[in-house]
Image 1 (cartoon, helix red, strand yellow):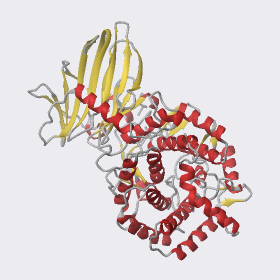
Image 2 (cartoon, helix red, strand yellow; image 1 turned 90 degrees about the vertical axis):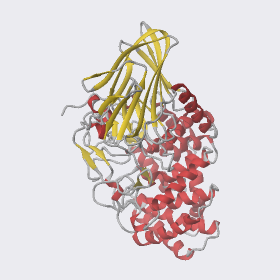
Image 3 (cartoon, helix red, strand yellow; image 1 turned 180 degrees about the horizontal axis):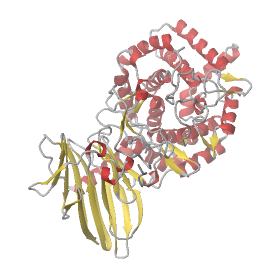
Length: 614
C-alpha cells in the first residue's frame, strides 16, 4: 500500500478537555480524535491513515498564508488565515466537560471576505466504520455507530457528498461562524446545544486560573508554562493518570516498525513527573498523580506492571490494525501495548522514590502507602537478581540491565531513608545489607574498566543513555570518576549531531530492526549532568538548542531525527515536556530537581567512600 501524505508532526497542535484530545494541523484539519477517552477508538484517524479514515477540515478554499499560536496561557488554538480577499482567525478548543464532550471551531472575520470550506469525515473504530448520518429536527447533524453518537451543530448549510459532510461558506469582517462537534452515547438523551462564545470564555478562564498557580522558572517561565499546560492536557481529570502521549503508532523512524501505542500511563516517568509538578508549585496535581500510582499498583506485588490504563486498567492487549496504512507508510499501526506484560525492575525503584519524594514534599499522608511499599520491597528482595527487559522495553531476550539493578538499589535506598526519617517500623539491618550488596554488584559487573564507563548490561561493552541517570538518582556522586567517564563516553559515542541516542539499535539485540531518532529526554538528562558537574554554560546551550526543536506552538514529540531535522515518535510526548520542565528548574535554581532527588544518596555515597565501600 502506498504511503499516506502525512502532515509533518511539527504541523500539529494539541487541544483537549483533560479526558481526550485532538490534533489539529496547520492546514486546519483535525486528523486525530478519540472519543470519549484518550484511549477510545479514534473517529478521526487520518494521522495514521488517510482522510478517508476520518478528519475534520475547516480551511480557506482559496490560497492563503497562515500563522498560529496558542492564546496566552491556555490550550485555545488560534490559526490566522490571510487571503487576497480577506482574513479570518480559526479558534479551536475543547471546553472542560461536564457529562458530554465538545470540540468547538469558531471562525472570526478580520478583514474583507474569506471563502472557506468545511469537510467532516467521521469514521468510528479507528477509521473503519461509516456512521449512520441523519439531520435532527433542531438542525443538528447526527452520526451514529453502535454506542457512539456525534452531533454537529452549525449555522452553515451542509450537504452530503461522497460519504462526507461538506459546506462552502464565507466569513466577513466582524462576523463569527461557529461549529460545535459533540460526543455522547447513542442510548443517552441528546446533550443540549452549547453557546460557543460562553464556552470560549470559560475555557480561557479555566486554563489561565490553572497555570496561574504555577511558580516562576526565571527566563524559561514561558517554555515551562507551555510544557505544564501540555502535561495537564495529557492528564485524565477523573482519575489523575498522566498519559505518555495522545497518539499511537507514530514511528520512531519514518517507515520503520517501532510504532507503539502510548495512550497509557508509565511508572517509568513517575518520579520525574512528581518533581516537575512540585517544583512548579502544582502540589494538587502532584498529589493526584501520587494517589493514582498507589491505586494502580495496589494488589499482588508479583503482578505489578510497568504501565496501566488511564484509570489503572491492567489488561492492555496489543493488536494491529490492518486497514490503516500508517503515518507516512509506517506500519503496523498498533493498539494496546504488549510491554505491559514485561518484567522491568526499574519500576520498583520509581514507586519507592515517588512515595519518598511525596513524603518530603509534604503531600497529604496516605496510610496505605507504607504497607504497599513493604509488600513491594518483599517481592523485589526475591526477584532483583533476575534479568529483565529494561526501561526501554526491549522485545529481545531479557538481560541484566545496569540501570534496572541501579533502580533496585534505589528501591531499597528510598524505603530505608523513609523508615529512618519518618520513624517507620522496618527490618533496616537486612535492607541495608541488601542495598550495599546491590551497589557493590552494579559497580563490579556494570562498570567496564577498559572503557572507563558503566555499560548497558552486565558484561556488555555497549552504552545506554539511562546511565546518565545514575548521579540523578543518587547512586554515585556526579564528581565520581566512574560517572565522569560514563558521561564522557556517552558524549563521544552515543550522540548524533550533539543529541543523545538511547542506545545503538544496530548492536543492541533489542529484537527489532535498527533505526530510530534521538530520544529527547536523554539530551535533557545530559544537560542535567552538566549542571551537576558545574558545566552550566554547556548545559544552557544544549537546553536552549532543545527548545528550538519544539514546533511553532511549543510542542515536543518523543524523538527527533537529526538527519531529516524533524520530530518523530508519538506526539506530544509527556516525558519530553517533563524533562524540559525539570532541566529548566535545574538551570534556574541552586537546588533543582536533580539535586533534590539525589540528595540523601549523595551523602550516603560520601560516607561509603570513607568506609571504603563501593
